[in-house]
Amino acid sequence: MIFDATVKELLNRKLRQLEGKFKADVAFYLGEIQSGLLRVFRDVVEDLKKENRSKDRLVIVLNTSGGSAEVAEKMVDIIRAKYNEVYFVVPDFAMSAGTVFCMSGDKIYMDYSSSLGPIDPQVWNGKQWVPALGYLNKVEEFLEKERSGKLTRAEFLILQSQDLAMLSQCEQAKALTITLLKKWLVEWKFKDWNKHRSDPAKIGQPVTKAEKEERAAEIADLLGDNRTWHSHGRMIGMETLRKELKLQIEDFAADPSLHALIRSYNDLLTEYIARNEYPSFLHSRKFF
Image 1 (cartoon, rainbow, N blue to C red):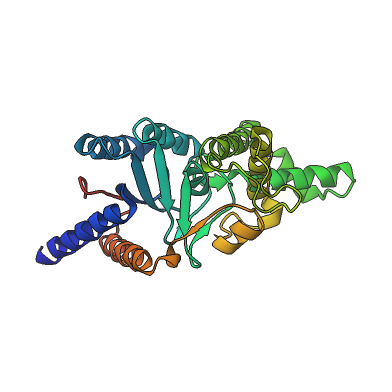
Image 2 (image 1 turned 120 degrees about the vertical axis):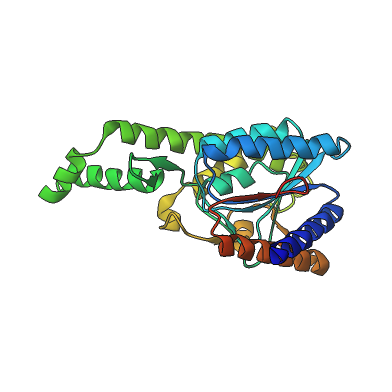
């Protein structure tokens, strides 16, 4: 169709402009982070790198409700095998495993309307994907009631029916998510954090590896605290990430031309995806 061809040409032009702005290869992804994505994602990354080996920076424009932490880990393996520097741009939202994925970047770009989410991994219960932390918290709530003698008969029956394998899977997913986040923050997000900038008692002093690890653990614990956020789908904005988590986030609205370009590219592409009812979508200068 002429309309689709025109849209594709316009989107490709905007993507090339983004590549010029960031001096990087750019790839867009919308959809859940699941294993069916990996082969195509690998091919997109490899094709970009083959065409221009001199570029060592990849920018990922990401829109996702989350998915598998294991798949996010493999996507990071694929990216870091080809690029030394990775930026994430979140025009709308990157939740759950998407937030963990973003924490593997050297920089994260958001604006006031963008959101990350609690790092609540999703596990498959045989019928659907369920948030692991919410599941574990509810079981812990019942156990606490049982210890205090307040567990009702109905709650006892619910607790008794729980699948121990499912509980173990949730615990493992939680542990993996926190481990990945702490590792990636120290290795990449904090790599240029060499001097203290906010602690009045330490301003100007060198930042030790132990201090980076401690800060990463604090961020992981807070993002993984389901009782703080109350909801698997809680949208955490840029200012909350900056103030409460003390996480450095780049505001792409600070550059009006970049802001306009990201918005126009993302909005046009997400509308195109919605109109065609695609469940997921990858776009690069080599792939549409």
